[in-house]
Length: 548
Image (cartoon, rainbow, N blue to C red; front, side, top):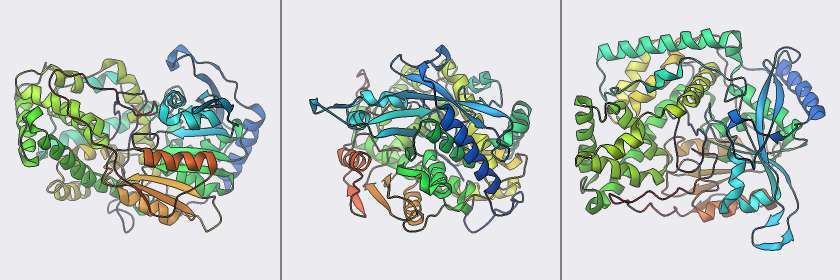
């Protein structure tokens, strides 16, 4: 799926979502997978690396200028093997950030709160950094948790300064304006195939022999080494989006090392769905969420003037696409840039007012808001390229993908008839995996037996587009003693510590007291955003700093 480089108004890290492999077995035309995964050498290597990390610990100090974080954060590094089968071989350093537990009860300044240990967070990806997460301690929704826990973020392998991976010159991300046809021609498809192959060659050229070690399983192993380096006997972890997937791998590989674990907006861990089929499912879910956005805009037609029905709003959007195809806004924003900006409405409904306002202004003759929201941001190009590179490497290495273009073409041509909004852009994002050098892994079968894993908490919005709700149900089935909390009739991606007090109440109760709700707990949806009239300034989002 396509989900790299989302920008939100509060924070500064990527929160990407996922893609994935057809249900019912290996995809037609796929490269041969390795035999069913066994972890003996890597498990021994992880234990050795964890012992070394526990002895070394992490020396936290001032963060470097390159890390570009506020002074309240402290930074350090943890050393992990590039290849866990050879723990004495090449080592890489992962950057880590921390804000210590405040110990202050936010409701009673005289009361001291006992420290519970470290809470490690991953915001998703692959390719997202959690270095800014500890700043969540400044937000009201996180103050109780930040009082009891050291909040710990980190940049996974390949991300940021953690053995960074690159596949192309970041300046290429700024090229544009560009097209984004909903019904691509055969010549356009050939162009994108050529681009995908060239991108893979760039990844191989830059990554070399290390490229194959960027995997979800290694991300899970790195997490255990980080646990040991922090001096924690048991891991307390919260993962969002892709973070739920390698968090689930961790729970399967190291169940005895788990203390408390939160899965927020869960990826479907079904092995046969990693990653191609998940991608198809995601495109369907984005279409549903795109309809939700248009319906909201239609309800506020008096503000935006884009149409009184969802169909009317779609016609306004398609009118803008056609105009941008003929004459890009500011010479920068074409149909692809428009689609990229409006894709974010599928992730977070706090984007709805500003995107509707920009579309309305553009169609009334003022392109400035649209150029501002959809135009290129040179200052973010290097981070975005790095995130794309890690995303591609991890997902391509994780599983077998169809290697025959006709399979992609057949599946997505059919899907685009019912889900045109995101389908083809999802294809172009993930198509490098069709030409990725092998061998590929067979995805681990995420599963724990009753009593093997401490009780865990799963949070999910019923209309989440990036990680469809069925993924939360599947993860709940596979992790014994897990409890699922559902935000009904809502679609924000990543709901813990956000706008829903009911969800946050369950999160606090679990992390602070170990209390879980009854099975099947349901929270009413958070309030819809209020419309933003032309000339109004967008209000700051309440999302925590792990999300950008």
